[in-house]
Length: 66
Image (cartoon, rainbow, N blue to C red; front, side):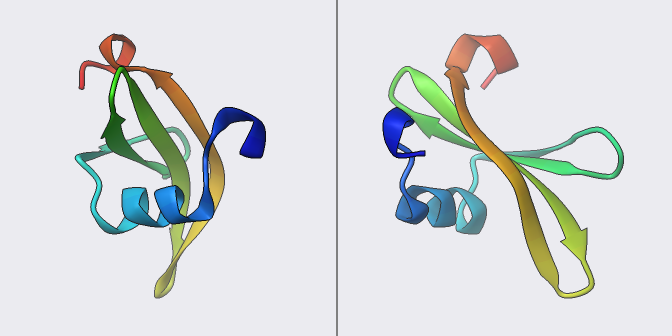
């Protein structure tokens, strides 16, 4: 994560206050947070009363329509 400038604080902000949440594959959800010319995409699963993060990555904003 350090290589791509993704900090734990940024991930928490993306999970706590996403710009959108969309459905992913296999009952997973994707939280999306705008970052300048990129978006942060956080793929997670909901288990009981918690969210389990599967992966996190940055993508170009135009690619996902946000």
